[in-house]
Image (cartoon, rainbow, N blue to C red; front, side):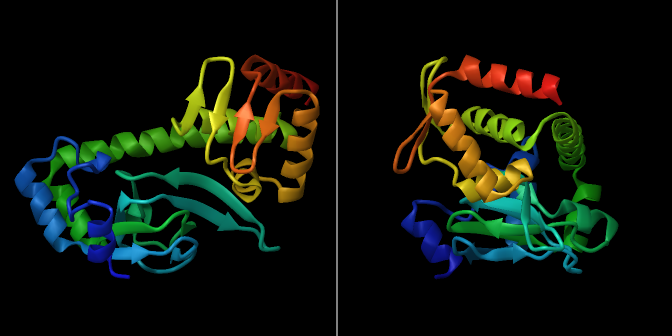
Amino acid sequence: MDAETFLKSGGFDKSLTAIELLKGVSPEAVRRIEQRCAWKYHAKGAIILNQDDDSHEVLFVRCGRLRVVQFTATGREIGFAEIAPGGHVGEMAAIDGGPRSASVIAVTDSVTASLPGAEFIQVLRDTPTLALNLLKAMARAIRGTNVRVHDLRSLTAAGRIVHELLRAAGRGRTSGNVSRIKLQPAPTQSEIAASAGTTRETVARTLGELEKRRLVARGSRSLELIDIEGLENFIEDDAQAG
């Protein structure tokens, strides 16, 4: 399937007006960027960018979700971030000309607009608002990395898993009240493992333990956090024990 067919089937168009990085940029400048982009469809599970590749394009996510990951020497996937519609990825290689620092995988069927690295740099020079937006985005990423490093140091695998569940609950793909939140569809055990820096088997054991403690309830395609305060206490106890 090509990008245009997929976009039309979902009621989308080839527009970058919803891209966070382009907020505040003039409509004329956004249109020029749209015209320079190559629009691509990516099937669920497709590897869009490969770690260590020498490609330098920047990808804007029009629809779908992408995951930024690295792979260990044993082939285990470690997730770093999920890129939602309106997000972007690939700017580091475009800025410094180095190889890709991570791989990017399509979590769902997705469409991206790809801007060549050299043109991205030129747009940064010509568009101060875009340059400032990029600096803010990179500052947020650094802050997030600092939090992640702290979590990896202070929490056990079980604590990191619970942390990822609460983080997923805060992303808005939920229903429920303050004390009970349902994730539907629930993240898979592999997705949780990748984000928490552990294995799928450890996630399965931890979810089983949380279920026994009546902190979560698993459905066929959902995961309900039935005691938010209890899960927060779990993390606090885990950090103190560590």
